[in-house]
Image (tube, rainbow, N blue to C red):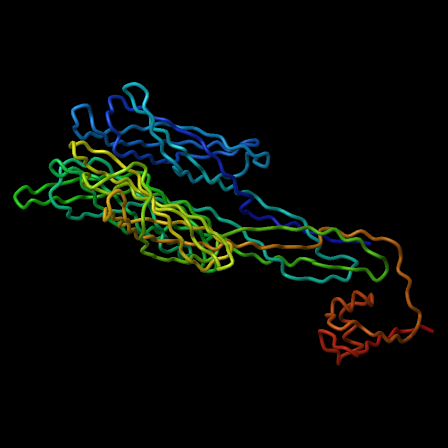
Length: 488
């Protein structure tokens, strides 16, 4: 028995990995840490034998009181290199890593303060996907389109600028940037990414601390020959550099703040390809053993966007009372996971920020506040990202903080295509041929044409030629007649 096979070759997402590493920075002569921040900027990721090495720089900033109770700031950058191990990694693969600061902790040793950032990384491996499949031969074959996802990696950079009035301020002490995507559009030869960058700023106004925020819109058009309106896409946009410049007008008592952001987008375009493969087969002369292969392809689908204003009693990292004066809410952020329950799917997580207060003794301190949330979303298998902005805090009752925040969610559907096809066929013992001129069969109700033909050991064309009035699926009580030509 002769068989024919073909080989499909494409480029796709192979698997995902996660990793963690800790990066530490030392700040001397810090009396009281008020607000700390760490942001990770990736320089590159490389696949090797059984591991992915990713590296970059963590930028630390701290706002603190010195021994004389003056508000000060300091910034430092620390290079890092980390390794994620997995025996499936090979050097020809392409690694995409997305680093994120999962937690920041502060400890004091002598006269110095050490800030430690727990750095997590989501890593996706891309590479060539190839498989062999049965395409024909001395067999009766059922051919069906088998759908697979191929991937095309794209990258691009752009700048976003904005300027706005903030009133009279002194020094800018600290700033943070968080990217929120609002639109991914695949066009003919162009991949368009739109979104907004939440910029939070902590500054001095006289002797007081003040905070303000701005949403800076951006648009990036990335050329790609592989891009078409039929593609699905996902992207990660990071802030590679942020520059803030303040210009004061003392006569008017105003300040104009100019923000310049350098953005980098790393995207993946998913294209659905149909492969004309054999999904079942049999031989009229021999019994056949079929070897099946299963292929799972993953990609991104549609993104649902949702904005919710949530409020409630916040948890505090340190006590406060009515003798404290609330000054500013800074370093707003949020994290969420999708939770499936009897009532449906919900995005559950926590909004976090640093609340800066001045005590009765005139000293400042930072109190971490956290506001849990649970928001209903329409999703089954998806990933979620969330942006926290516009957070406010109020002490209505002594010792408690009521917080309110706006949350912007992006819930991206995860697509999974399961393909099953015949990879090979092996002939076995011969099948005895019925020598009667006419046979009448009583088929099973619900059978389709292929199932009936396989049971009768005839091609679908032979079955329909002898029974042109058959309707599928088979109904109860139908009869099937098979005619066989006899040579004299």
